[in-house]
Image 1 (cartoon, rainbow, N blue to C red):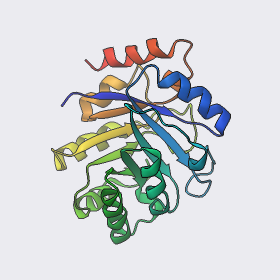
Image 2: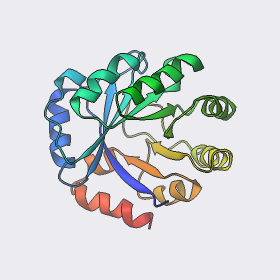
Image 3: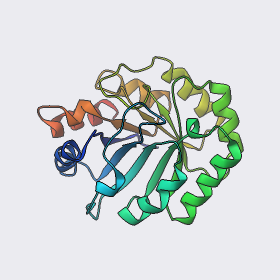
Image 4: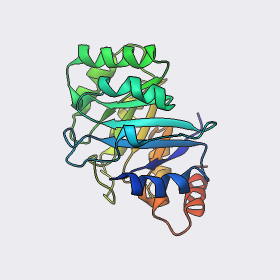
Length: 217
Protein backbone atom coordinates (compact mmCIF):
# COMPACT_ATOMS: atom_id res chain seq x y z
CA UNK A 1 0.00 0.00 0.00
CA UNK A 2 1.29 3.44 -0.90
CA UNK A 3 2.04 5.73 2.05
CA UNK A 4 0.12 8.99 2.08
CA UNK A 5 0.77 12.30 3.82
CA UNK A 6 -2.12 14.07 5.59
CA UNK A 7 -1.58 17.59 6.99
CA UNK A 8 -2.99 18.45 10.41
CA UNK A 9 -4.79 21.58 11.53
CA UNK A 10 -3.48 22.08 15.07
CA UNK A 11 -4.82 25.24 16.70
CA UNK A 12 -5.22 26.62 20.20
CA UNK A 13 -8.09 28.93 19.20
CA UNK A 14 -10.51 29.77 16.38
CA UNK A 15 -8.30 32.50 14.90
CA UNK A 16 -5.31 30.18 14.58
CA UNK A 17 -7.59 27.44 13.25
CA UNK A 18 -8.97 29.67 10.49
CA UNK A 19 -5.49 30.74 9.42
CA UNK A 20 -4.15 27.20 9.14
CA UNK A 21 -7.33 25.68 7.74
CA UNK A 22 -7.51 28.22 4.93
CA UNK A 23 -3.91 27.45 3.97
CA UNK A 24 -4.16 23.67 4.12
CA UNK A 25 -7.46 23.17 2.26
CA UNK A 26 -5.75 24.63 -0.80
CA UNK A 27 -2.98 22.03 -0.89
CA UNK A 28 -4.49 18.73 0.29
CA UNK A 29 -7.66 16.70 -0.33
CA UNK A 30 -7.35 15.11 3.12
CA UNK A 31 -6.94 16.94 6.44
CA UNK A 32 -6.77 16.01 10.10
CA UNK A 33 -8.27 18.44 12.61
CA UNK A 34 -7.00 18.23 16.20
CA UNK A 35 -9.25 18.68 19.23
CA UNK A 36 -7.96 18.98 22.82
CA UNK A 37 -10.09 19.16 25.96
CA UNK A 38 -7.39 20.21 28.44
CA UNK A 39 -8.01 16.97 30.38
CA UNK A 40 -6.48 14.11 28.43
CA UNK A 41 -3.72 16.52 27.37
CA UNK A 42 -2.59 19.67 29.15
CA UNK A 43 -3.58 22.02 26.32
CA UNK A 44 -7.00 23.14 25.13
CA UNK A 45 -7.68 23.83 21.47
CA UNK A 46 -10.28 25.05 19.04
CA UNK A 47 -13.74 23.83 20.04
CA UNK A 48 -15.78 21.50 17.88
CA UNK A 49 -18.76 23.86 18.03
CA UNK A 50 -16.56 26.59 16.51
CA UNK A 51 -15.92 24.52 13.39
CA UNK A 52 -18.34 25.50 10.65
CA UNK A 53 -18.69 24.79 6.96
CA UNK A 54 -16.09 22.08 6.39
CA UNK A 55 -15.38 21.99 2.68
CA UNK A 56 -17.19 19.28 0.77
CA UNK A 57 -14.98 17.10 -1.39
CA UNK A 58 -12.24 17.00 1.25
CA UNK A 59 -11.78 13.99 3.55
CA UNK A 60 -11.67 15.17 7.17
CA UNK A 61 -10.48 13.11 10.12
CA UNK A 62 -10.90 14.20 13.75
CA UNK A 63 -8.08 13.51 16.21
CA UNK A 64 -9.84 13.51 19.58
CA UNK A 65 -7.29 14.21 22.31
CA UNK A 66 -10.14 14.13 24.83
CA UNK A 67 -11.18 12.22 27.93
CA UNK A 68 -14.61 11.01 26.71
CA UNK A 69 -14.45 10.58 22.92
CA UNK A 70 -17.89 8.99 22.73
CA UNK A 71 -19.42 12.37 23.63
CA UNK A 72 -17.83 13.95 20.54
CA UNK A 73 -18.66 11.39 17.88
CA UNK A 74 -22.22 12.40 17.03
CA UNK A 75 -21.28 16.04 16.56
CA UNK A 76 -18.24 15.07 14.48
CA UNK A 77 -20.57 13.20 12.14
CA UNK A 78 -22.83 16.25 11.82
CA UNK A 79 -19.84 18.46 11.04
CA UNK A 80 -18.80 16.22 8.14
CA UNK A 81 -15.93 14.14 9.51
CA UNK A 82 -15.32 10.71 7.96
CA UNK A 83 -12.86 9.26 10.45
CA UNK A 84 -12.33 9.34 14.22
CA UNK A 85 -8.97 8.89 15.94
CA UNK A 86 -9.49 8.36 19.67
CA UNK A 87 -6.99 7.60 22.43
CA UNK A 88 -6.42 4.37 24.32
CA UNK A 89 -5.30 6.59 27.20
CA UNK A 90 -8.79 8.13 27.38
CA UNK A 91 -10.01 5.02 29.20
CA UNK A 92 -7.73 1.92 28.99
CA UNK A 93 -10.94 -0.08 29.59
CA UNK A 94 -11.08 -2.36 26.56
CA UNK A 95 -14.85 -2.87 26.68
CA UNK A 96 -15.41 0.87 26.80
CA UNK A 97 -13.00 1.37 23.91
CA UNK A 98 -14.89 -1.28 21.92
CA UNK A 99 -18.10 0.70 22.48
CA UNK A 100 -16.37 3.79 21.07
CA UNK A 101 -15.48 1.79 17.95
CA UNK A 102 -19.08 0.57 17.60
CA UNK A 103 -20.58 4.03 18.14
CA UNK A 104 -18.20 5.47 15.55
CA UNK A 105 -19.35 2.83 13.05
CA UNK A 106 -23.02 3.49 13.80
CA UNK A 107 -22.29 7.06 12.77
CA UNK A 108 -20.79 5.81 9.49
CA UNK A 109 -17.20 6.87 10.26
CA UNK A 110 -13.89 5.00 10.36
CA UNK A 111 -12.48 4.16 13.80
CA UNK A 112 -8.75 4.39 14.54
CA UNK A 113 -7.33 3.92 18.03
CA UNK A 114 -4.35 6.07 19.02
CA UNK A 115 -1.50 5.33 21.42
CA UNK A 116 0.88 7.72 23.16
CA UNK A 117 4.66 7.06 23.16
CA UNK A 118 4.70 5.99 26.82
CA UNK A 119 2.15 3.20 26.31
CA UNK A 120 4.05 -0.09 26.21
CA UNK A 121 4.00 -2.15 23.02
CA UNK A 122 2.52 -5.20 24.80
CA UNK A 123 -0.45 -3.08 25.91
CA UNK A 124 -0.88 -1.89 22.33
CA UNK A 125 -0.81 -5.44 20.95
CA UNK A 126 -3.30 -6.64 23.57
CA UNK A 127 -5.66 -3.75 22.84
CA UNK A 128 -5.53 -4.07 19.05
CA UNK A 129 -5.99 -7.84 19.32
CA UNK A 130 -9.08 -7.32 21.49
CA UNK A 131 -10.86 -4.60 19.51
CA UNK A 132 -13.10 -5.82 16.71
CA UNK A 133 -13.68 -4.11 13.35
CA UNK A 134 -11.00 -1.49 13.89
CA UNK A 135 -9.97 0.26 10.68
CA UNK A 136 -6.55 1.30 11.91
CA UNK A 137 -4.04 2.24 14.58
CA UNK A 138 -2.27 5.55 15.05
CA UNK A 139 0.98 5.84 16.97
CA UNK A 140 1.94 9.22 18.34
CA UNK A 141 5.51 10.18 17.50
CA UNK A 142 5.41 12.74 20.32
CA UNK A 143 3.37 13.27 23.47
CA UNK A 144 0.15 14.88 22.20
CA UNK A 145 -0.94 18.45 22.82
CA UNK A 146 2.08 20.48 21.67
CA UNK A 147 3.86 21.28 18.42
CA UNK A 148 7.56 21.46 17.50
CA UNK A 149 8.58 18.29 19.35
CA UNK A 150 11.24 15.81 18.26
CA UNK A 151 10.18 12.39 17.02
CA UNK A 152 10.34 9.57 19.57
CA UNK A 153 13.02 7.23 18.19
CA UNK A 154 11.11 4.18 19.43
CA UNK A 155 8.48 4.81 16.77
CA UNK A 156 10.40 2.74 14.23
CA UNK A 157 10.60 -0.44 16.32
CA UNK A 158 6.98 -0.03 17.42
CA UNK A 159 5.82 0.28 13.83
CA UNK A 160 7.81 -2.77 12.75
CA UNK A 161 6.43 -4.90 15.57
CA UNK A 162 2.84 -3.88 14.87
CA UNK A 163 3.27 -4.47 11.15
CA UNK A 164 4.58 -7.96 11.93
CA UNK A 165 1.72 -8.72 14.34
CA UNK A 166 -1.02 -7.13 12.21
CA UNK A 167 0.09 -7.28 8.56
CA UNK A 168 -3.21 -6.04 7.12
CA UNK A 169 -4.16 -3.21 9.47
CA UNK A 170 -3.65 0.43 8.49
CA UNK A 171 -0.89 2.07 10.55
CA UNK A 172 -0.69 5.83 10.99
CA UNK A 173 1.89 8.11 12.65
CA UNK A 174 1.32 11.63 13.95
CA UNK A 175 3.78 14.05 15.55
CA UNK A 176 7.42 14.97 15.05
CA UNK A 177 7.45 14.16 11.34
CA UNK A 178 9.61 16.08 8.87
CA UNK A 179 11.64 15.69 5.69
CA UNK A 180 14.44 13.91 7.59
CA UNK A 181 12.34 11.06 9.00
CA UNK A 182 9.26 10.44 6.82
CA UNK A 183 11.10 7.96 4.61
CA UNK A 184 12.14 5.86 7.61
CA UNK A 185 8.63 6.01 9.06
CA UNK A 186 7.15 4.80 5.78
CA UNK A 187 9.71 1.99 5.46
CA UNK A 188 8.99 0.87 9.03
CA UNK A 189 5.38 0.19 8.06
CA UNK A 190 3.31 3.38 8.20
CA UNK A 191 0.51 3.69 5.64
CA UNK A 192 -0.42 7.24 6.69
CA UNK A 193 1.84 9.98 8.04
CA UNK A 194 0.45 13.18 9.48
CA UNK A 195 2.41 16.40 9.19
CA UNK A 196 1.85 19.38 11.45
CA UNK A 197 4.11 22.38 11.82
CA UNK A 198 6.56 21.23 9.12
CA UNK A 199 3.92 22.11 6.54
CA UNK A 200 1.54 24.47 8.37
CA UNK A 201 4.33 26.78 9.59
CA UNK A 202 6.43 26.66 6.42
CA UNK A 203 7.00 29.77 4.30
CA UNK A 204 5.67 27.76 1.38
CA UNK A 205 3.34 25.05 2.75
CA UNK A 206 2.63 23.52 -0.67
CA UNK A 207 6.34 23.11 -1.35
CA UNK A 208 6.91 21.62 2.12
CA UNK A 209 4.14 19.07 1.53
CA UNK A 210 5.59 18.15 -1.86
CA UNK A 211 9.01 17.59 -0.27
CA UNK A 212 7.49 15.07 2.14
CA UNK A 213 5.66 13.30 -0.68
CA UNK A 214 8.86 13.07 -2.71
CA UNK A 215 10.70 11.57 0.25
CA UNK A 216 8.31 8.61 0.53
CA UNK A 217 8.18 7.68 -3.16
